[in-house]
Picture 1: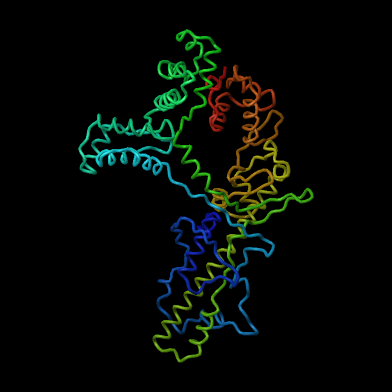
Picture 2: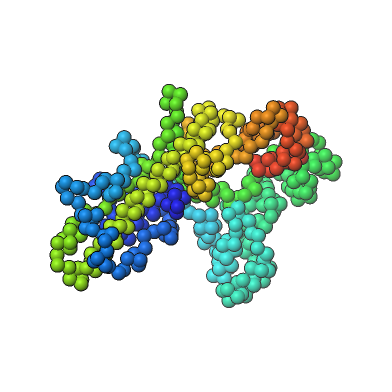
Length: 475
């Protein structure tokens, strides 16, 4: 079950770990593990083979015969028990290039080193940089940081000195870094622009953020026009400049690291002459087998008189071969379970995988697939939660295809994902200066036959990360 929920990228590391720990397990000739190692993770679980349970060897054990472990020319161990083939000769092997870059904090520390600061301020600056979040904001109060520096680094400082060093950091790139809130972040960027672009006037955007920030965030544009005594056109020009700013300056750097985390799909669906074809994406999976050397060693020990040391060696070899066979069988069972589950999902959502139209998605819960493949719901959940499928229309998390059902006026059951897609399309097509309210969206859906309550529309809108109508308004 643990192997089942591990995605393909992590499974490579798990296989590598098993080969290192068990000398009786090896790669087939010509097969090799990818050179790029992923972050090491402990994937050990209660289902792994426990050697301690087999410390005592009993030569009279009827269940143990050498025939189970030694192969001869006439009666070899079946291939499916000693090896697993996870790739095809037609599969292409691709090396994925991973870009390496400095982290957000490392870039700031480099800029700190360019300044002529004494050792004390460098320590304070490094500590402040370490407290910035991924968006580039400093959310920790300066007074609390002063206490941390005193107790943690025996460095006595005060709020004034911290503010001075913070002001230096706020001059670093990207602009807006080191801000304590969104308002300060936007102000830092506008002030930087004003100092660098002398031929352009940023006084109105600065005034809006400085004096009318609350009205700006709530899009009360009429109040800003009235209190600032400006025209609607002047406000529109100022808002255009503000909207060019980056509300998360740290994200511009940290996002590049996240973009390098490539998704390797576990399944691939192709459309061939109007028919769906499913395959497991296993080009990076090595071919495993039980070590022939260990089999020969077992045969030699079986023919000897078996001294005490040889008996101990025999127990050790038996344990390792058992463990290798178990692991190979577990990998094979994992592949079979994955393929069977994905095949059931593909057939259940055939219309979608042929067209890519989200409105054709059928309501589907874990129980529906569990009943088709004859597995427990928890097993289906393990498959769906961490696996990706590559389709002609994009790569998606398997979990995203599961949704509850809702009954239409004509009695037909539809997926809630279909309703969310229609809701998203309505909002995308709305008039931007008069966005649709939740009440209006409810009426539109009812006209289309989806009889749902306003609070349900609000819930779906929030799940789609779409703000309320007032915050979607544009001039």
